[in-house]
Image (cartoon, rainbow, N blue to C red; front, side):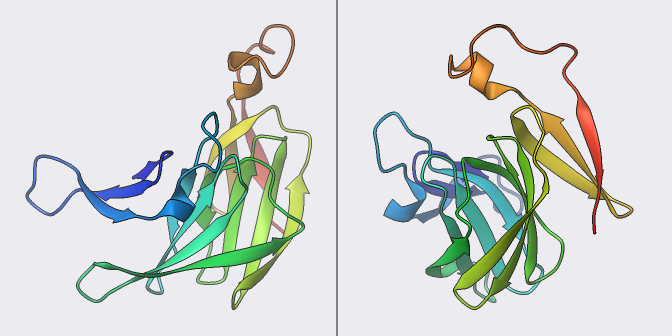
Amino acid sequence: MSDSFGKVWRLPRGAAALEPWLADARLAPSQPSGFGANGIALDGAGHLYVSTNSDGRLLRIAVGADGAAGAVEEIAVTPALAAPDGLRALDARTLLVAEHGGRLTKIVVDGTSARAEALASDLKGPTSLAVVDGQAWVTEGQLGVLFGLVQGGPSLPFTLRRIALR
């Protein structure tokens, strides 16, 4: 589980409570009113990816054979991410991210850099997503309304959008 103030937590097998798995300054927001670690996804190849909301960072964390956190690398994404939230791995090099600014974005990682491509750019504050049968199902959380960043009330009803993956 990601913690927007600088940690990733885990629930050890047989335990009744979460414990910190990794604390790293890059997981924390760079400003007091911001949010850090948010989106989180395992790539199936020994890495955990975490996006930070306010700063738009993408971090790759090595997962040791014993499950312990290893090296943390920042991935330079072009174009930069804008308020990334929900994150899912399609495979070891390809991620999907819901960006609060209204986009569902595909990210292809190559070493410590990545290329981002918007698959949809008309979403209303997307917050999370699931992938089923070649389709991304994206929740439109409209958090900008909740936090007063968007004027007026929410656009009702809240929706779940289906987006075909290319």
